[in-house]
Structures are given as C-alpha cells and as structure tokens.
Length: 439
Image (cartoon, rainbow, N blue to C red; front, top):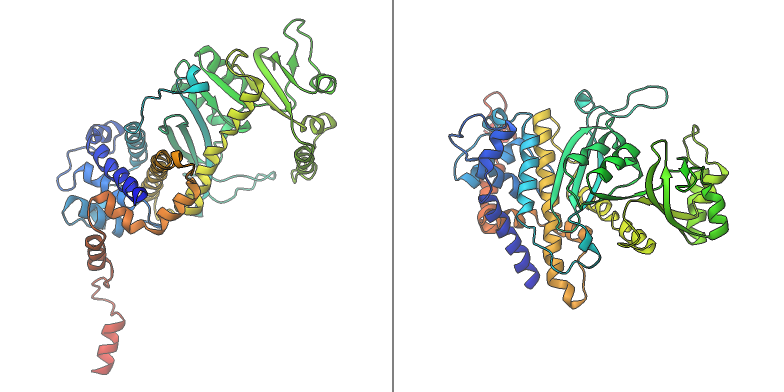
C-alpha cells in the first residue's frame, strides 16, 4: 500500500502543479492560443491530455471526450480538430518544462556533484511515420540518394540531478545529432556539466561550452588529431598507450588546437574483442577500421574539460556511464508507454499526440524518482522499465487518479461515450440489419 499511496500522491501533485502553472500565458506566448477559450479552459485541456497520455493510441474522439470530462462539458472531436494548430508542439514542450520544474528540489548532500549546477543529458530517438508525412518529417537517404520513408526525430535534454526537462523538440530524421549539437548552448549556465554520445561530437561546440564556463564529457572520436601542449607536435596516442597502458593528461585537439583533458582507460580483453569484431563486420563498405583504430578500441577514451582536482580518471569513466539513463528512458517509452504509436492522420494531430506522449513519459521518470525515494532505504531500487510496463497496464486507473475521480466513474463515462455506433442515416449497423431481416 505505501507504494500505491506514493503513486497516487504523485498524481495529485501533477494536478496541483498543473493548476499552478501560467498555462494561458504559455499558450499565448507559443501562439497556440489566440483568444480566451469560451468553452474548454486551457487548464482542463491539459488535464484531459495528461489523463489520456498512458493509453496506447489516442484518437481524436477519445481526446475530445476526456478533455470535456475534465472541463465538465461536452466537447466534440470536430471542435478539437478546429483548435489544433502547429504551435501545439511548442506549447506542450513549454508546459512539460514548466511542469517538471515544480518537482525540482534543492540538493543538499551532493557529494562529487558539488562542483556542478546541473548535469544535462542530451540524446535523440527516432520513430517511423507514414509516407504522407515525409515532406514535414523527411526520412533518411541511402548512399544512392534514394529517399526512405518519413521519420520523426525527438531531441531531448534533461537534468540528471533534479529530473527536470530543459528542452524537447521534433524534427525530421535528416537533422542529425551533429546539427543539433549547438542547441544546448542556449540553455547552458556557468557550472553546468554536459553528457552526450559521440553523435554530438563537435569541437566548435566544445569550445563554446568552455567559453560559457560550463563543462562536458565526450567519447573520443577516432581519427581526430592530437597535439602535445608543450611542443605543439602531433601526439601518437597509440604509441603512448602501448608504452604506458593508460593516459590522463591535457592535449591540444583538432585544427582548433583546443586544450582538453584526455582520459584513456583499458577495458577487459573480452570487451575489446567484441568491439573489434563489430568494427570489422560493419556493413558500411565506405568505412573500414584501420589498425590504429582497432588498437584503440581496447580503451575507453574520453575528452573533457573537467580538471584533475575535481574528478579522477576513474570518476570520469563512472560518471559517463550515467549517460545510459537516457537510453533506458527511451527504451521504456518505446517498449511500454506507446512512444511511436502516434495518430498520424494529419500533422497537427501528430504533433498533439507526440507531445502528449512525451509529457507522460517525462512524468513517469518523476514517478520513478518518487517511488525510489520511498524504497531505497530498504535496499530495493525501482526499475524505470518495469514501472513503465505496470503503468501502461493500468492506464484507466492512472487516468482516474490524475483526474481526481474514481475508476468506476471514469469507466462508466467511457462506456457511455465510446461503445455505441455513430448515428449514420446512410448506413445501417449490424443490429439494425438483423432486426430488419427478422421483421
């Protein structure tokens, strides 16, 4: 029961936090709201979306009905369709950022994190879309220039320490992570730490992070030139590692000669062999691993501007492993929370359902943190993947908790609104046809 009470308390907090947000101001700033709503307040519009977000596939009719339920008014799918516009994406992203900020708590005992204000994780995930959306969300091209189906790329930046969201944006597949690397610069504050994978590797962006007084840890990109900071001569990393077995020192990197700390720690031989096997069997025939690259796969190599006095080489490697948290977030969202099951009938409906799903996905991470705080003293730790699976199985219960209603009331409402044939004078349903045939 304590777990259930904690989850229900988190749902109540969701409702309270939403009530405290200046949502109408956010809606006007984003361009989603042009005039004051006459029937459905924007607060109830959001509450209805949040209540439905755990359901697998969101239809326009279902969305309209539950939004109407939240506002205690009748609301048609036609009215909802007229209200949708492209700015819904930006509006719901702003709501998610502001909503999760309510959960942030000042950290007192921060240990090794005491040198940093925030730890920002950035990553992306891709979901396929129907071909008719390829113009707005173009997919990839192969080496022959042939276009592939539409695909949606979601860029996500979150604060690891406080579990808040810093940025969320949608684009086509062709805006790769390299192009999105500068996005984080507008969000950075002095003292922030950035963790990203190799897809975001860009020396120019690293230089700007340093100039802003922030920090980063990145994997090393093979093939980039290194120079000795004392002599300015090229540094043969392979030779150094063969002689020393590991490395932790400052080097000059690339054409910019950017001074960065390079950390190279050996990995177990089994891990190194697995990496080399994958590199040798790479399906891309345009890229073949050289002998130096194969040798360096035996080390975990990082570039950072975090000084030795703050973190040792071992801590650098341990901290970078936390980047996998965002990978597990994406896995739980796709496998359990329906991220990818979007209503793709038109662009505005797609944007609405994608952002609704993302809002709930982010809240699931907050639920996980709340339950972890309850369970950790007993030595049990909450799995985000397993929690997401449970929440997806009880979406009606979750919707009732978020709306502040009983499950029976919400189920009765759903039965009364969603089990009947539509009234269509030009077409008879099964029971009408059967009655006519018997008569």
